[in-house]
Length: 343
Image 1 (cartoon, rainbow, N blue to C red):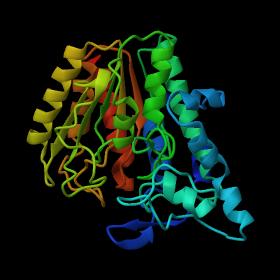
Image 2: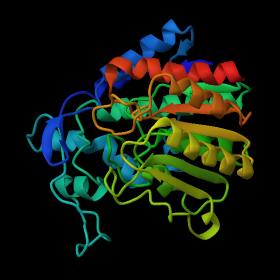
Image 3: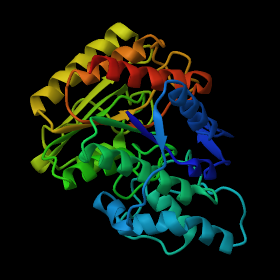
């Protein structure tokens, strides 16, 4: 399995986030990718830098105005004489207008963001674009005949929607990979999100589509981020009705319960019968993760990989969360090695 990774991920560094009511240093930091890279290299995976793709590739899943905002936001911030990281200070919540995009950078930041946990710094756009290219390159490798590929993306992407960012995510890497596979002739693509947090952005992008199935196993939004999406009754709409499956689980979920949910996800995907699979690979389900509350152990990640291999379809892995940095590389490599052993 080829690994696609860009050192430009490190350009997104610094700032603070609002986490459960407290302003703290970001849990999503460059060392996460460094630990993963070392682990996959130790495991013998070949590491490639991403190819370049035209901006039109981003517009296959994202709004043009949103992409332009991300590209220019920090430059506009600095033009106001400000330094450092950007966080929004207001959002178009209930009772406020959502039909008008403010011309000022502070208003636009709040319009496009949905939380205050995702700072924009000077190098954010460069890093986010490189992560998107990693995902698109991994999808291209699979479209060209590879049985699987892994995009070591940072920043992650599954919380980024058609025209919004948050949850450490700016561009939706998994959605870009799925759309690229569709554009290359894969008629039906399934996206399985195994991150601790619901992939609200991916759900948003494919909500009304029947050609891309979205399945997510995650912590209940009753108590866990992103709070306002990821309930079991969310099933898609229009042509996409029935092509979204959410499997929320309570805090403290152990492997036995998680494994049952994974079986249900596998059954749903098998029924959909996709031509390719995209896996939003978050390993913040680990028992030692500092911002999550599932109880999976290192021994369980190879089992997840083996289960995914059982679908026997071309597969693109796209890195999402995981914040126990000392163990993140071992857990990611465990999934990938388990997948390859089963195949």
